[in-house]
Image 1 (spheres, rainbow, N blue to C red):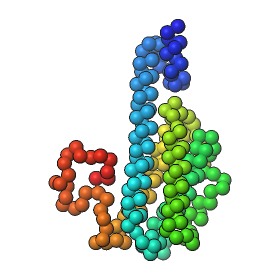
Image 2: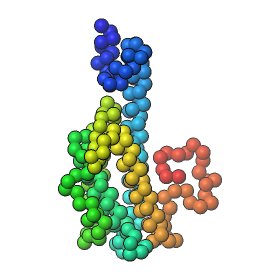
Image 3: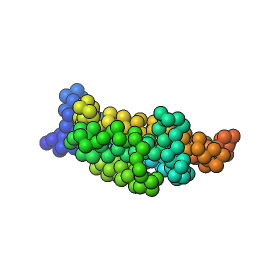
Image 4: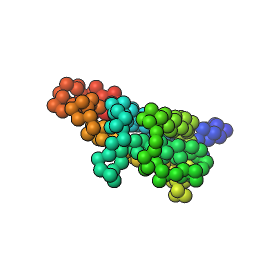
Length: 212
């Protein structure tokens, strides 16, 4: 009877495989280990998304309207375009994340790469809205759902894979935002990392989540 109580706490597919291989008691211990690891993964994912947003926000705050829309070349993307694209992607991917395809029928991806007649303030309001959709969805996901299958453009993947895919995508574009902001600000750029020739001023072990 005790084993039946333990089974109620299992992620069922994983627990079944573990019990078949190791027996009920050993499976209980292993399952708890995997669940703790899963919870750690979820917390780390949240942290990395928050860190990416913080980095982008600090770069965006340094730009004026002209710099926000400035392009390196006619074919390159301005910071405005990148923000539009990320906001559109987030709202599409994270709305009804577990139950509908991440590429929504109502999304117009091509328009995200066209200059829109919006002020920096107006576009940053969309940016904040998009991040809220992401974090509201992310905070509702449980460790038991990490192996659930979802779809992006009809491609099946687990929740875990989708999260890692989005972190990679957003980090790529946040890096572009920072690089462009640094280019436009020149000597007035306020560094978001350790400044050149200043590494010795930062103690080993002082890392607290900043981009160093």
